[in-house]
Length: 429
Ligand code: UD1
Image (cartoon, rainbow, N blue to C red; front, side, top):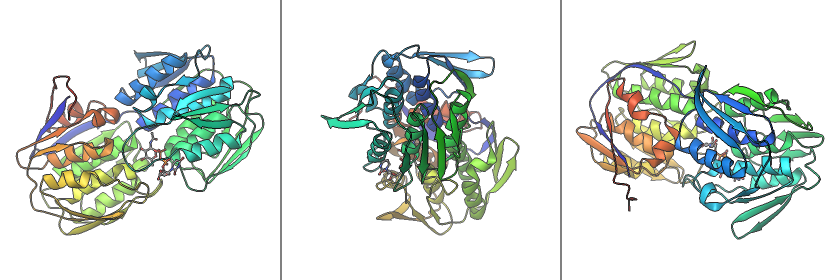
């Protein structure tokens, strides 16, 4: 398997264009199941996760064509008919979000058999809320041997869905199913992440009637059929935030473009509190740090517009060399500190107590061999490697390839010493 080697010490200076959001792209791809007309998605990132989902969608009857279109990287998805309602374990386990094909399959063809998901190993991550939403819409759900069987032979019916806790995936899933339901669906306690707004815009371009995404109440008036559309994927706020942290860590000046500053405002505020300079621009941010050491700051993850859990590992890496002690509380997922022991291999001083990590900044990290444990954790090791003395080698970077497009190229263009070491094809133990 491939590894990434980083030689620490180089400042970052340059421009990094932000890609389309992985977390949005994969839900938008699932929306192609809802129509017999082509859906053209532009600003599409090319990632392992989009490839996984493309493979699964192809099995279900969607033709998936990736190309360079007039407005950049595009994917055209076309499902004249659903040829199979079966999503097998070997494909769904590779990426949790592929579970979101269940709702569109039931909505369009009345039945589906979808494996329970796998995905990042960050806590239990059940799908009870997804199933609760589909049941509220009238689907009959049975679980057997790791599979969900869902049936709604006479179609889904609009309903009120009130989530007991906020879930991004379950809100999206409910939206994807309710657009073709008969009648009005009201989702209460909906997630407010920007990717929900992106999904609403794409579904509405396809002829759906969705209102309120980005607020806790989403209202969907079902329609009989959807049409094809062209939609540009929202910029990836997690990729943007990751490079903003990388710039603050390494020092120098990095301009992030093709994005929107408000998508990472809670991070920008923390970066400024720590002593970095963040300039909001029309299409992104400029992050600068001169030679001085950053100060430790505390943070707590929260649903949008709070501090994103997907940026917690990166910020922890930043705090490993800050001046003082930083307290980092994770409130979205249990077990999301698996990067802490790996950062400690680089010399970080971190202790974890339940949902809180305390990071006492050290003067210097030392390069070492470390292992990626999940998608965002893996990039936190790259960030730490940017300042560690000597070489840091990160293994199991298939996690990184799931969510970061051309990472070595983007960081390398700003002066980072990052290279990919090609593996021998053997899985790592
Ligand atoms: C999405 C993002 C992920 C991000 C997370 C929180 C994608 C592909 N992934 O994940 O990167 O970290 O939002 O912003 O978009 N839960 C339940 N039952 C359910 C569903 C969720 O108990 O049926 C719990 C989860 O275990 C977690 C919390 O709800 O503790 C929030 O999870 P959720 O918002 O659903 O995250 P994902 O959609 O899986």
